[in-house]
Image (cartoon, rainbow, N blue to C red; front, top):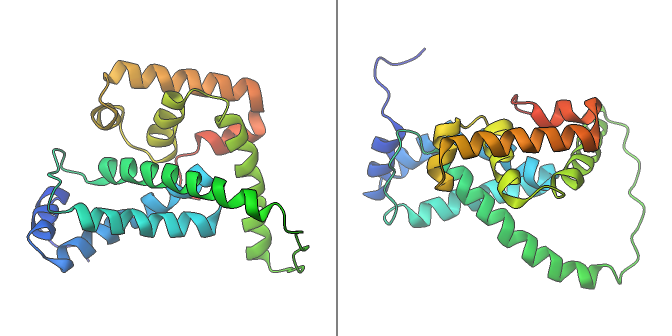
Length: 197
């Protein structure tokens, strides 16, 4: 059952900035899944995506009194924060991997549960896709992640990225064309899907 009046993200954000944990909780409930999917699509791991989504909301909570929303939706800003959190985590992971690569990797114990198999398939396909996406210029990667994967409008993405809407559209179009050439149809369906995984 829906209520007749639901506060906008901007109103909830103002309440959260004033100290309302309930208002921030409502923002979390509205956008947690989208932020989680955005993080997964950037890193290709369900577990890391969950950790990064949590880190994103922790960062948002810490910045709530210093940030004023200019849009009615907090999602574009949250996705930009998530992108920065992922970048920071990648730098940390790169340093740790140099040490981890010296340790022999144990073969994982087989698990035949359908859910686990599905997740492994998703991560394998996502790794293939991310390898191709990393071939794109960073500005095309960001536009693709915001507009295609996370369903942010071109106008909202333009506001977050600080560029013209036409530039966002061009970046998305170039990214799709390049991925089509690199991956073909089978993986492109994952690259252009707007549905939540």
